[in-house]
Image 1 (cartoon, one colour):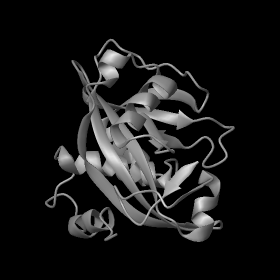
Image 2 (cartoon, helix red, strand yellow):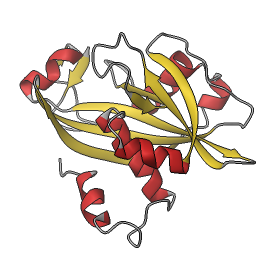
Image 3 (cartoon, helix red, strand yellow):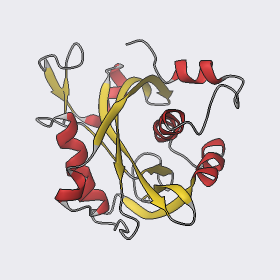
Image 4 (tube, one colour):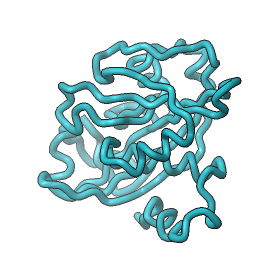
Length: 196
């Protein structure tokens, strides 16, 4: 169940089943985390998850290392720490080091309806010798990708759209995509911050 409110950090007016939210055009909120590794040979890398083939939405698509909708009674940071443990087997002492790095906001439309979304973004440095493990079955596998590999995956058709956006947010913040390299840089950044 998701809490429905008039805006971020406002009291819940009522609750609704997550799968019905887009049918009513109600804003949803999520917490997403990019797990990065300072690899001694490959440079900075990102852990990318592949969603389970049995997921109701975007089965088999690429995803952020850890992500989840903010359900009833959970806070933003609380959600990402819970998801770290449930989806990737991160121990609490590591998950607790997540760093809040902003948010993206957008409107997504598909056959079910129109859904304005706010995704709170987090980064977490993952030790080079740590390998995430599939725990709750929502993820099929994890792969460690170089930044060049991540860029190629984003321009392909294999990423869940909002997860590609969260990953782009990471690449912008870390200087891997700059205005000098991409002619429509400003337009892309603006699309990640739709006024809500």
